[in-house]
Length: 131
Image (cartoon, rainbow, N blue to C red):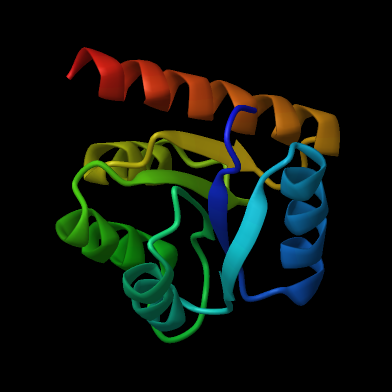
């Protein structure tokens, strides 16, 4: 991945944040912030201005969908990839309609997660260049 991408990882489970952190740093990205709930995610987004956000949906205080919508209000071009263990068409549709660029199930392999991150980043760059 060209240029070091700054990523924020948002999940209420430390173990998931750790796994995602290892995957993105192996890709050459830098984890600039982590958050364990949607409230922290919104504050950290404002503070660190990451290039990409990987965010869980089910979290305490403010869930990932509410945080997604809040971040999209701050930056309508934000690159946000939602993470979840829920495979619900309605949830996926709500996230995509709110501006999420991708949606990953937590039960896929680390290699699949890495591939999806790379594809999402490339698609995002292509989208920005054509805008």
